[in-house]
Length: 273
Image (cartoon, rainbow, N blue to C red; front, side):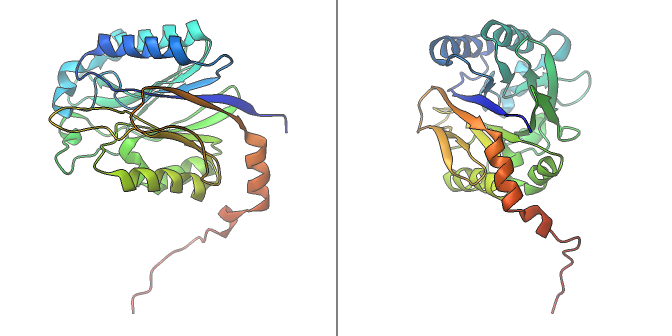
């Protein structure tokens, strides 16, 4: 097996509700200021284009064929010679509800994949399901020999999708979120757990800063290694980029030594007594 190593970068920001142009400019400024030399992959947070305000999603939805965000990310990837896992934007559909979609661009600015959120959060005052429909299926994208599983925010609560990516051969899983500050324990615990139980590198990238009406994003975006150790982080509410070098060969060696997936049983039928 040849050497598989990358420089992985994550970007944390506070989005302005409903203002696509302002949010594009903020990403452009952060990338220009902080993207390190030699970056291979850059991950953005969920709905960074419009901020987390479900009722504002319809007015901000972009048609796939004429999307300012897709054009912006394509140019950004090409200009900075970096593969971009584009967080998510609200994708307008010809009929019915929109999609919460993550576009992926290679470093030449070509669209490599698009994943639409498979689980929608519509609890505790959130109403995502009223404005967005569920995506079709998980998407594993391969870029420069690295297999990456794509998930968005609430997907983190469903270990089944993460295990499916691991079984499909994922090297890295990303969770791009706009996570509320009132749920710190699930954010801290579930992101780390998904890395540990699947022996995989995991990037957990969320927005920071205020949303509206006294609500805040949690911030604290992190990258975990295959044993759940934090190897890079943007603490608290800071806007900016952090990065780390990842050698996947070390992960493969660990998987070959600690072969936990072989211990999965074919049947977990419960006996009630």
